[in-house]
Image (tube, rainbow, N blue to C red; front, side, top):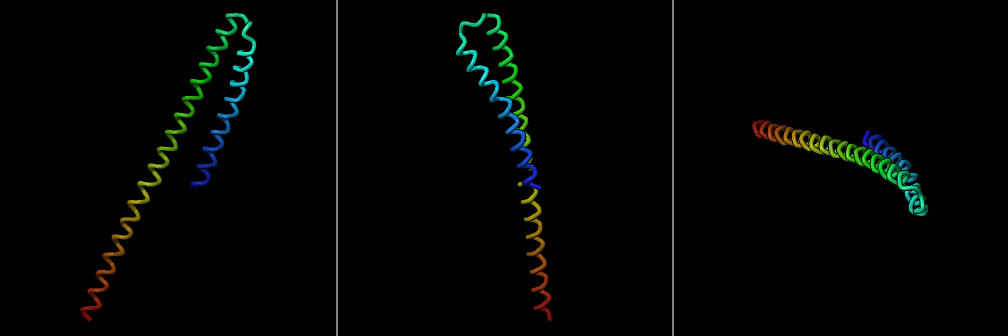
Length: 102
């Protein structure tokens, strides 16, 4: 189950990377073509800014998912393990008392 979650995270990260690569290539091309029209550059910058904001939101959501998964995974496991150990200790004590009585 944990590997499925990791695979999902990896897929989302790859998707983000695939979306960011073309944007960076376009930006490089625009830097090379500095003689472009002023309006085109302004529009391009706005589009880039919007795209970057979208990617940022996706990354923040992803990090939030990772944090929630970690909290759910680790906190729940510890509690049940502690309860299990506590029960084992109690049953061992009861058995010892029974043996002593006999």
